[in-house]
Image (tube, rainbow, N blue to C red; front, side, top):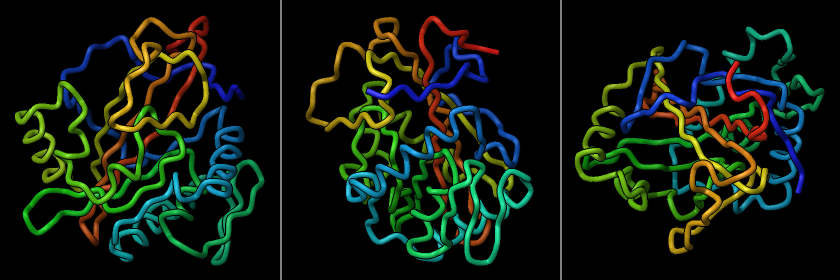
Length: 249
């Protein structure tokens, strides 16, 4: 068990949110770096190297959509002095060099702390999770979700009824380019491991009940409209702190 922790959570997790709990976000707020960058990125690289089939799935996503995600992230990172970007590679803040080659979504996920899940609208009007890089799952499994529409992806969530499903689909339809939105979740875990997948048929562990674990885990979840392809990116920034730590600064 390796602890890769933040010192604090930069938003107020004590505020009770009604689903889907969405708020506006700064145009560049869907990609952030924090004090756990080096540790999280080393773990991300390890997982992608050792178990790529478990952390990266593609059900036939549009190459243009995946490439646009990479282009948008590179455009954002060019404005940050802790990244060094050339036509062939990127030097991350931790000094690791990432070649700009291979699958664009997987390449993008090696540049930033966020997990990246791409949604594209199907012929029947519902958004489908077509590809994703999920190195830090909080009790779900990417391979079970990829290729499925939003309603099926969230099926195991008790609170996610038909009314919520319709609201979420309207939300995806209404997201505007340059105006991302965000929400957060809040979980308690006994272990601090970043990679904690769970099958849909598996029993939920008691340590995930709020207040029962040694670690607080929360995800800053952003929804971003890609301006050219119209796809929607779901980016997930994971924070984990010890419960004795100061949660909010």
